[in-house]
Length: 106
Length: 119
Image (cartoon, rainbow over all chains, first blue to last red):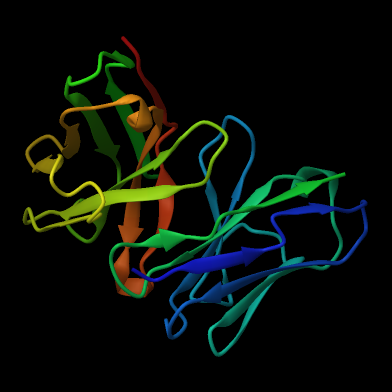
């Protein structure tokens, strides 16, 4: 199985901050990396797919990048509604696997 | 707009079989994989398995001996069966649509069903 190591596991930030979350794959996954946002009691929501493609309807303050097996989710200016938990997920091979999550708190 | 509506028993005893169904409303049923993901309380996401419209399946090896995913194309529904449940199977179970044509992401999700295993 491909292991996805996500960091940090938690993050304290303020409205307006620029924040970065990192996900490292245990082997090459090409660009098969997706990012999700989950709020308490809700299903995950797709933010970015194929490492850097913004899902329709997602604000442009969200962006993704890759460098080898390292992937990054950046939020350029945190908004109140962005405080949530974020997960990366590889879709290179089954079993599909997720990172452990990053809980973003005020 | 595609919607997934899921249902099933929420309280099980150890050794029973978990059964959940997810109905797909709107959009194509044949162009995607239909997946199940679970999330234990306070923990992260775990992919359970998936099925396509032809009945082709992939399962998480950690659950493979106990899991069956089936599909009913006449009703645009797919189902999850997990046998011999224990407390470790207590989780919110989500159904979702996986689009492998554009990278294998899950872009449409059900609202989730809370399943509790307790004697």
